Length: 239
Image (cartoon, rainbow, N blue to C red; front, side, top):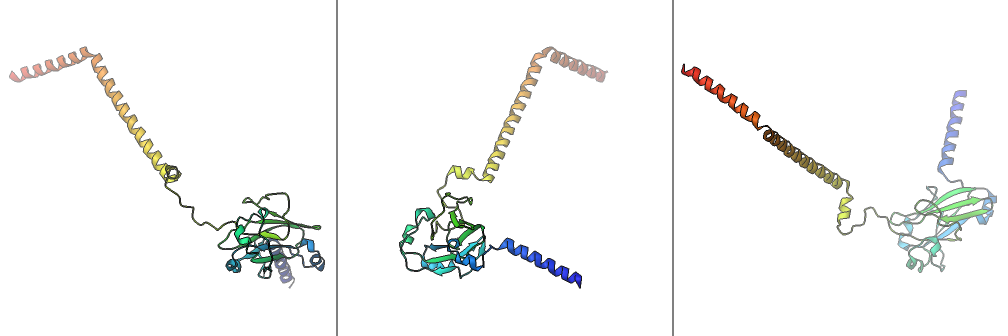
């Protein structure tokens, strides 16, 4: 019986540890709710038809539909400090709003996820005095040390590219292909090996010709010896 209790305690400890690592720490105390400075919220500027596909994640964990709310009628387009490159969408006003629950002190990665749009990423730094939000670059490093004002004005920066952009044909693009480089190197090696073999054969032929020209007496003696041997054989045959 004690063994089963021990196993149950171990399972509870492991599950609690996994949950703490995988989910953001959201404060549920009334004190945290009353501190309005810790609440992070923002407005999303995009095509209203794309709003149903939006998801707010914190450290990779979706926060649910309760976080994403329909936007109230208000004016104001996303500014340059928010990293938004589509001001025409901002002229229509925000399409949705999101509100992050009060968080425990720490660092959190805030993302707006959509299947057909790319949004900038943000870093939320929460302390006992409040929360600060910074926009991140592609390497998850803040663009500036100055926190962004609230509410955040978030807009898409582009659309995902699943295939590289198609451009005109160029030799430089062809030479960047590893298979083409391998074929060219192999052809070059074969060409130089053939040239080396031809040069070596020509050098050996010249050397043999030079040796034969340098020893004419030996050649004559060799021919004379062969002639005498043939004459001797003929004489023996006649006798």
